[in-house]
Each structure stands twice: as structure tokens, then as C-alpha cells.
Image (cartoon, rainbow, N blue to C red; front, side, top):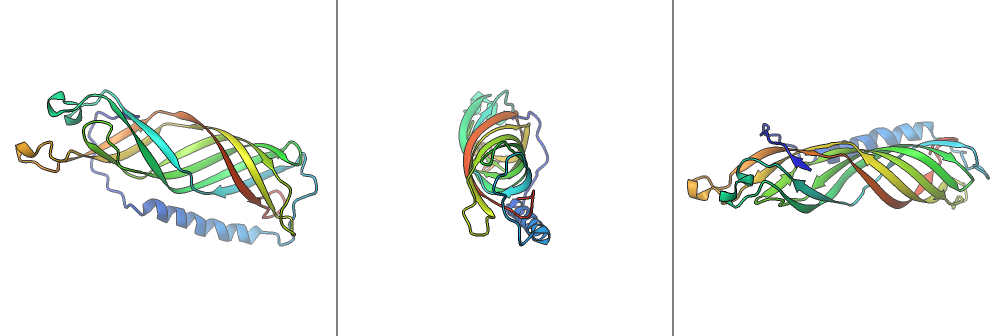
Length: 223
């Protein structure tokens, strides 16, 4: 992740904005799903050759390595104990995630498909250089290749199918905004608690992961 060399105007974000967006999406999506739900829907005895579209939501625990390079300003000034480059690790607390997916059943249990996910994270404070960096909530878009094993229905109405999946993903460039808190660095100059609003531009990257979940059949072809 590279720090932008320009100082951007202050961008204050409501810490609840991501959560409110997530709740709003759930409020809108749940009634929509219920309105098209077929009370008599059931998974077929053999799903081989069928197609499925679906929606998913959830939370992902993520850790990020933050690497800042070619820094300018106080953080990069050796005279102030700074450095033009540095790295640290921070936990990305999940706020909300929503995904749209398409799957094709190679057999009754083996499935391949693609997923688009939109995720919102709230990073914990980190210190890649000589001061604390608080990054505001930011969102990411994930393009995922999904291979999963779907078990047979586990309920009497044949609507619930547990699954285990392996995923390979690609995430385009990530933009985030935050605040650098210099603490007492400028106290001698009569300016304690100096803050700087910054823009961080993250490189695109790939991901790999495994997950488990439950697929609920809303109606034929939609889960």
C-alpha cells in the first residue's frame, strides 16, 4: 500500500456509516427474497447440469500488511525520527459484506462458479512509520472463482444444503482515507497533537481461501 504524496482535505466519516449501509441492504434484500420465495421449493434429487444464481452475506476476519513507500512530509523526515518507508500489520474488522453469485452443477454435489462481493472493513490503528495511522472504513470489490462441494439437503423440506468451498479471488486497487496522529512530535514547536488527513492507494492483489456455509433454496434456480 503506497501513501499518496498529496494532502487531501479532511474526510470525516461516521463510524456507523458502514453498519447502517449493511443494515439497509439487508432490510431491502430480505423482503425482496421473501416476495419471490416459493413455499413448495425443494432441491432436486439430482442437480447435475443445472444453474443457480444467488446472494450471500457475511463477515470475514482479515489481516492486512501495510507498506508505505516514497513518503514525504513529517513522517518521512529523519530529523523527526521518521523514514520514507515502513511497514506494519493491522486487523481489518468486518463491517458488512454482500455477494452475488452464479454456479453450475458439474455433478449433484460438485459445483463451479463465479462470485462478485462488496465488503466494508474498519481497520484498527496501525503504525507503519513514526506515528499512528487511523484508517477510516473502506470498501473492496472481490471477483472470485469458486469451487465447492455441496452436501445433500439436511432438512425435511429439502431446502438447506451445507457446503465447503475453495476460492481464488482478485481485488482491484483499493482507496482509503485516514488520519495520521503525530502525538508529541511537534510539542517543542508549540503544536501538540498535530493531525494530518491522508489518502492511501492500495495495489490490486489476489486472495485464496476456504469457507463453509449453508445454501437455502428460495425458489427453483435461486438460492
